[in-house]
Length: 81
Length: 400
Image (cartoon, rainbow over all chains, first blue to last red; front, side):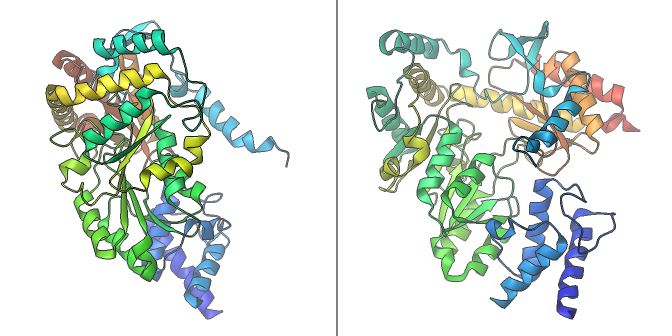
């Protein structure tokens, strides 16, 4: 539980930092639907996430990712593999 | 949700644009007057938002060759290159492209989009790693996706970001393909191809460069940014289009790899479409000859580019980082970008308005481009229009 929260908190921190987003964030925040991010901004954010977690995330893995919690789950899975 | 409900978002976008005083997607060119002027909405307008970089769309030799091909070969081939659609002149153009790029192999596609789609879809297989610049053109992304490859995006024009991703791929890096453009078409910025080539060598990957907007503009022979940056030996595949500097339509891929001709048997966007019209091939061949024979065209477009970039920078506008025939002007507010674009339009200067999601940084841009055919007086007229509009809107230096 602690690990999951840490990943999600780090993702939210990166989101605030890289996108200068003032909107309140939670694990359920939808990256596009709630924040209105353009696709290029999502790509930039994901580049930051990859660097932060030192992971390579291919686009197909992200097909079902909509929320911060979804993204956290992908990261944790990649960290385990 | 019904089948057609997905168009609700597109309908909202269209309605928003339609509510503007002038819908930027509804501009209709009523009459083309020259390579640099057109009648739009009843007004004589300077075209400062095309891709006609060398100004060859009205080249008399190209027009004559196109007319002769129409008369001798008819209006179209009606078939695939792999069936009834390969004419002698398709092969001649491929040989001329190979000679121009100093590569043994060249393939012609029906459009630039098809060249990217068809080359990448043939080259990559499901599971192959491909490293794609985050601002790469949609056709490059679509080609990667069509192939089923594993797509990894790296930060735009960032060789460190590219290298770190290849490092994370471990052993897979040696079978990876790096995909980037030369000149980027919206902001007019150039890829650091020498740095990318060094990364490619370090990891043993392959490099694929789209020179759609660079062909005819860069390098001693006009071959593109790959030539100018001295990385031709490191670049495995170069793709490009005929619809910009060569003034027609179509695309190509050239390579030193003997596998390129085998793409013909593996590339669905090459096989399952009609081949380019004979008249298109004829005008393209002449334009390619002109590109080589008239280096003054390159000198003229660059003189115009430097003149415009310096003047717009002096107006305090937020420009891309590199001087090029494409000048991208960023605006914080979408409304300001639109007002500026409309002001220029009303002043008889056509530019491109780029709104999200097409804008690279999620913001709004005006894309202004120059050609070899613009006269110094036309460039001055474009600058004067920007100055007047910026003053009216209080942007740039006039913001205070």
